[in-house]
Length: 111
Image (tube, rainbow, N blue to C red):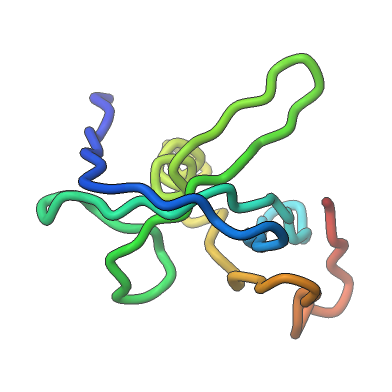
């Protein structure tokens, strides 16, 4: 499957403390990841699944021995292929010092 190309028109770093909560419907957990910046994509690029905004968060995936930064929309597209289609979606964008709201009963929160 060919990758969707995303062209960044401009970038702004995010103030400390912004995070995204991604819902994983199969494992029943919210995955919390820090937002390190906001990218304004070119007009023909797809956007993150969080409304009609024209900004796409850049997220830090601080994996042990393999940290990387990616566009949130690209990550959701990559995770949503094959049998995992529809498994992940943005639950909410978290401003500094806010915790996830309306966590579904029985779900865990992974930071």
